Length: 108
Image (cartoon, rainbow, N blue to C red; front, side):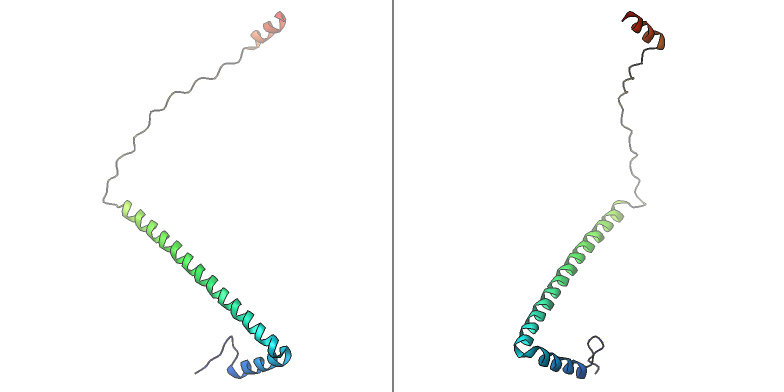
């Protein structure tokens, strides 16, 4: 049975903990271990939340795809779309011709 964690065997892991205990001391080692435990717990919670959100989004996507495939079936003949009656647009007001502009300038 191979119990490697991140490519580190059990013997290497024990050496790392012993060195950490010597370098940090028993009080700091306990505090660091507590903080590491909190960090790992928060990380697991974050990933669980992320996994839940992704599953719900994928479920919604699957439902919408299923609804589209059920809505459009090749056997059904959809009713033709009727064109809407559009109101005519008002014609733009024509600009006065050049002659009319000249006459209005002469009158002023």
